[in-house]
Length: 262
Figure 1 (cartoon, rainbow, N blue to C red):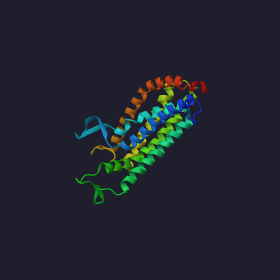
Figure 2: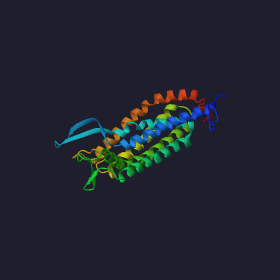
Figure 3: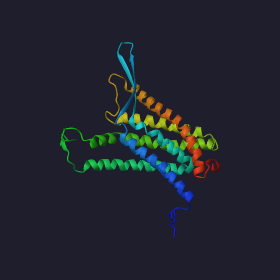
Figure 4: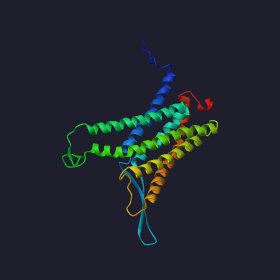
C-alpha cells in the first residue's frame, strides 16, 4: 500500500508548497540577521580615502568605509518584501519579532559560553591563550556584545518600518506598482537603520567606529552614514529586478496572485 505523500498536518500539496516557500524566505531572513549581528562591526571594508587640505594647511582625510555586517543586510529587506507581498503584514511582523528573539538567544549563548570554565588563563581579568593572545571566541563575544544593542534597536525600528511602509505603498497604489513598494519601503527603512546603528554605536560602543584623529566626529559620522546608506540604496535599487522576477515566478508556483486579494 503506497505511503501518503502528505503529513496529516498539511491540508494539501499546494498548502505544503506555500509553507515550504515561507520557510525558505523566513530561514534566509533569520540566517542573514544572525550572521550580520555576529559579524557586525568585526571588520570595516575600506572603499576609498579622500585626502583634503584645510585652509590652514592641515591634512583632512575622509575615509569611506562600510561594516562587513552591511553585506547580507539588504537580503533581509528583500525577504520581508516577498513575505509581505504573498503572506501579509502579520506574518512579516512575526518573522521580524522571531528574528529579535533569535538574536537574544545568540547573545545568551555567547554569554554562557564565556561564563563557563575553559582552558584559557586570565591576566588582569582578561582571558588569554597559551600564546598570550585573546582567544577568538572572546574577541567575537566582546565585539558582538558591543554592537548587539545598537544593531537590535536599529533592526527592530528598520524592519517594522519596512513592513509598514511596504503595505502603506501597496494600499496607496491599490496593489499596483511593485517597484514603488519594494523600493519605497526599503530605502526609507534602511536610512532609519543606518542612522540608528551608526549613532548608537558611536555613543555607546567604545572604539566601535574607526574614527580618524583630528577629524571632527560629526563629519566622519556623516560619512559613515552616507557611505553605508549609499551602498544599501544601490543594492536596494538593484534588487528590484529579482523582486519582479521572484513575484512573477511565485504567482504561478504558489497559485496565488496578491493583486487579486488586495
